[in-house]
Image 1 (cartoon, rainbow, N blue to C red):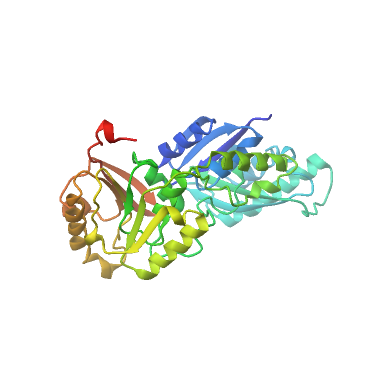
Image 2 (tube, rainbow, N blue to C red):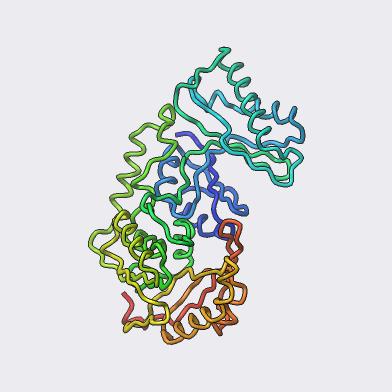
Length: 383
């Protein structure tokens, strides 16, 4: 088996969650940066990382890294990377995406064009042919530039890993699947505990919780870009990884997960999404205002994504809403509750300081994950 270096981007603030996931999958972490975890693995890692990781946005196969402050340097440094060891002679390759931050070379279109020419020149020199048909398998190349350091990689995922395939419909302000999975992982919730999302929208948090509780791998039912890298990764590796995932699923478990929302259309969408995810029987969805939340059992969990008030017309309603959140949650005094919001005065109106407050970037929006852990159940009542 060969040794490969992979980069897994994630939401800023969730690097520790992704690092733990990769470690549990059995791979060695080599670097943790803002919004990215780097690790090493063999050919099976192409398959297993894409299929199993819940909080990574995609899996990138790292080609190399160099410094360039001029387009001449960029051309020469790109040309020296081992492209013939990576790209077959008939492969279709292009620089699919480039980003540049605090660098002298900031025109992403020029970076993409020059790098493509440099790769062709490198391939021409190695393969000793003048023209490449590009009729074979696709190898999308990505480059990120930070302070003149170019990091070059091959995208192995294709569509972002947050696209599990079950969310065909979304509500007004959906939370991404990867972020929802990470929030659940930041709590002590497990499959034997009650979980309620009183602002469930299109159902992402309850569905991700159900998939985690049943140990359904997030990518087991979708396909990935690297499945076309047949010269390097035999198709049986993908079959073996999916079989590994299927063998770990739990089929004799009944979860206690509920999702509420005041929007009837959102609840309809949530039920359809849960059906697509194969967890509809595990989640009770209901049209119900948050203020009516109650539960006869103790020691449950609330994990939710309430309105942020990103639209100006909604901001005036936030103080009253968060006051109601605090009053409603206070009635469930043995429960633990966790909420993500960008509303700066959330704790003030909830009326209670969070035990922990983690800063997470949801896209370009700075949010806070407020954590209010409740008392632990008595030992004799714990599963």
